[in-house]
Length: 125
Image (cartoon, rainbow, N blue to C red; front, side, top):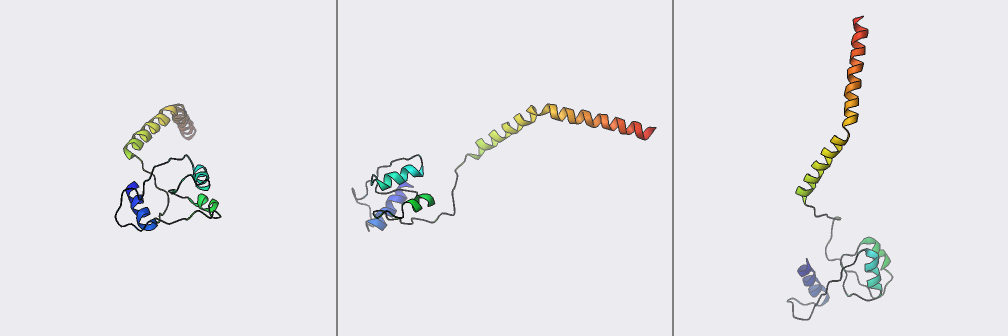
């Protein structure tokens, strides 16, 4: 993803077809949330921020030094998940929930048996 972003910035911002050394020297800076990213942008601590979410876009609309460029259109958020690990965890969770609810199941079976015997006695007499 970094190389694609570097290509896009070089192409759209610097009009450079081929990457030259020193044209775009990106140093990643990780943030914990969008508020931290907004503060870095407002303080001019970063030159390029990615991704900009809707709430950050609204907060930055009045900043004169900020130019928002749409790199690509996304239909929404995506999650990358290890499905095998999720399946194993869900099986374990299901087994745990079933085994922890055995008194309720035993009560249902016992009360069904008692009600069946009572109905059989009422029908028989």
